[in-house]
Length: 73
Image (tube, rainbow, N blue to C red; front, side, top):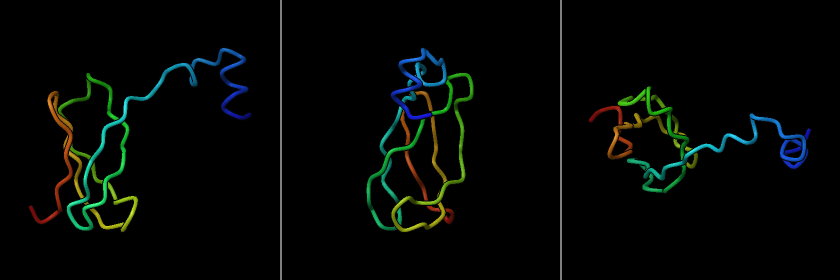
C-alpha cells in the first residue's frame, strides 16, 4: 500500500506524523534528519550511523536540543 492509499483509508499509522530534527555528523559535518523519540522517552541517547558517511555516533535527545557526538567524545 502506498502512502497516499494510507492517507485515503484513514490509517492511523500514516496520520501520526513524525517529528524530525536536524543533526550534524561529527565526522563528515553533513546535516540529516532523524525522528524524535516520544517525549516520554526523553532524555535519550541513541546509537546511530551517519546517513552520509556511515560512521557511528551517538545522537543525544533532550527536551531542549538534539545533537550528535562522536563515540570518542
